[in-house]
Length: 238
Ligand code: C5P
Image 1 (cartoon, protein in one colour):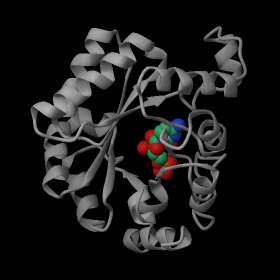
Image 2 (tube, helix red, strand yellow):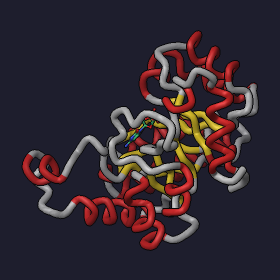
Image 3 (tube, helix red, strand yellow):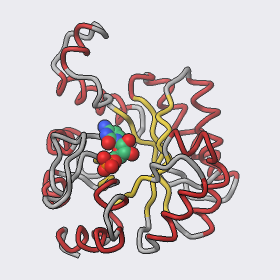
Image 4 (tube, protein in one colour):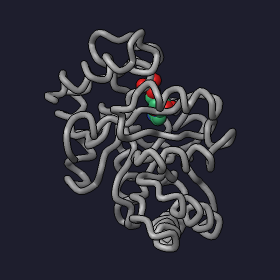
């Protein structure tokens, strides 16, 4: 896993290329960046090439959810960019998940890159227990559903999941050490919680079983982003 600084993934949560490049320039010490839907739709391919040219690791968080053939096509294309992590929804089902992992590796191989690790979104954190049962008609406890989705992903050949730090210890026990847990919802004690009300500190999240932490606003909105990043690394033990 490497040092604390290599365990932190910073999201490029900005609308376009100019703002993204400014963030990359402001934080040269960040090695791992997340590209999500907004930035990808506005300027994805250019940005991914820019990140590769700076030797950065890339978490492409597009949360694919489709039939196996379409998932395979999208994952093959993502694999060609040489990304390191790629998200798909576990609820896409076993055939789609298997197709996703295989196609991502094929895409990477075609462009001479390492295969990305395809990881599963178990359940969006915007879905709570009430909407799971009332709106989606899934009558199981939230944590049981999350655990089942992680197991489905693992059985389908995926090698990790995105989860809240609150679920990290359960999923680490359920899926083992080689199944990477990537956790947003992390806040140092000195940062504002914002909309991450159930956040853990970086050290607590790692202690709970997270392999990687996605930490955005405490770094990107800080008066001195580089100093905030350095402080988090120090609090995690360097
Ligand atoms: O700024 P903040 O640290 O809250 O950013 C967290 C990042 O992780 C954002 O890109 C957000 O979209 C993403 N994320 C999240 N909660 C989830 C899944 C993804 O905060 N359940």
